[in-house]
Image 1 (cartoon, one colour):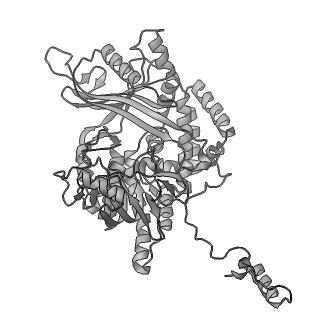
Image 2: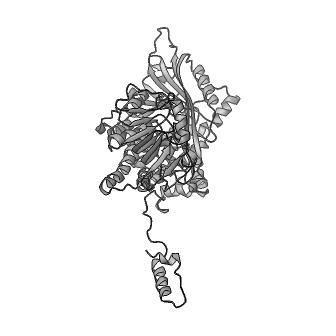
Image 3: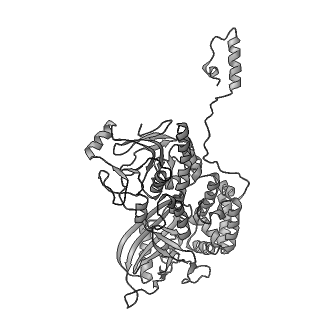
Length: 559
């Protein structure tokens, strides 16, 4: 849901450079839509959406592949809302994929912290005030600059949305709103525009209306990360009207990733009981002077915790910590579906980003995964474009299959299945279990826990999770760091989860005994139908028969 201005406005964002913006008047749009005679457009790639995943895909298709690209979203002009936090080394790896094409993502950072802090006190003998410091740098992405950098690339913009809905595999409603042909697709947009394109990339989010989910994975339900955040101006805590090193307990030169303490609630109160049973944590980014971004977050839950609960807990926590908010510059309401089924195989439209279920199933991390995966997805589609340049024939089915296989190779699916179990385990924990879980997690060697958080090929440390034996070693090492009660709970959860429908995917992810998941590789359609030899024999015998006068159609087709 990254959106924007009036769908009918005609304007350019000042930083858009070479982009061409297409629009029309309201009365003309209505008539065109009814008559089916709206503006006609033709391109190699149509990208739906305008969030980071969409603009990354459009950028690389136009800059790297040199293909004609249209990006369609009626809300294209609206500024991005989320505050994106990334690990320094991951962002540097992402930027290496963009710098060669003149796309400077590396400098789209407006705050850097050399260390990251966590608070897991209150359980397992950990003092409430104890700080767990992680010596791994963290960055805050300048979302406005990143939005500009991923927009100044030369692709065409249509400020309109699609209005189609998948009702089956490669079938859509309303009739003729989206039609696939042998060479590409034709889609009608909400402003009446008709776009002929070789391939469509859907980046409209996890709850896309175009991407059909794998029915074999219907038993895999999504979890939900909910958060209330605010960029706050806070009152200094000393008479000098300046902060020294801390804002409450939060060090100004550290990013606080987790604060899972609940001492801000009255003991044995209903609020404390709710916070223990359905945990949330504080995420704090000190920005400049007395400005800080606070976010109270439910990591993953099903059903989702309420936004009101998150906001109330945030304000209660700040009041208890003596942090007085004297102004609010921004508010953020964060809704992130996590996990759930992957896209169905053999579908023509390429889902990307949330539409391809690429959000980390245990953590909600997505930005670095999407930006680095865009490069691999574009390369996979470009192979088909390059082949078509030579042969003159573009195969959109093979292009889509190759793109999906670049995103969800059997190896990557196995790694995801491991993280899906992680999300399920986290959802069943109360705050005590989560404190023990993460205290043990961050006591692992950094390359092990960082690889789990990355969870995507090409990101730093992911090589420590790309094989079944690496994941098994991670799991054994992790169990040894956990408090005994949490470790026993995890072992029991592994057994119970493995016995559920679809639970064998976990065993497949950590052992060599269950093979690979089914991938998305393109399979050439068979030209021969049935047993040609048997049909040919029957045809020949009928031709020689004194009785048979007509050769059935089924037998006549023997090639």
